[in-house]
Length: 79
Image 1: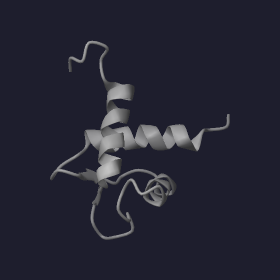
Image 2 (image 1 turned 90 degrees about the vertical axis):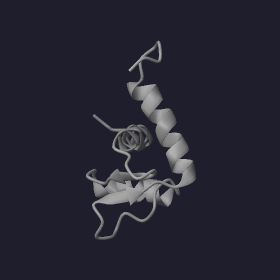
Image 3 (image 1 turned 180 degrees about the horizontal axis):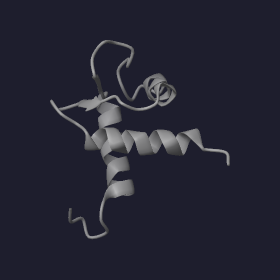
């Protein structure tokens, strides 16, 4: 099966939102190709560093929340 990188990026962005800490930081334990694409899109800061987490940009944070709600939220908004 062929995988759609845009859909994968969107899902990982939503997962990054679910692991947020310190305001805009998320654990970066995802495939490096995906993190590099998200960085190229301006949604996260450069993941190539010694930190175990990556910072989401303001645009990335907004899109991450939208993705998390779309992929993982309930229909009635209840958690």
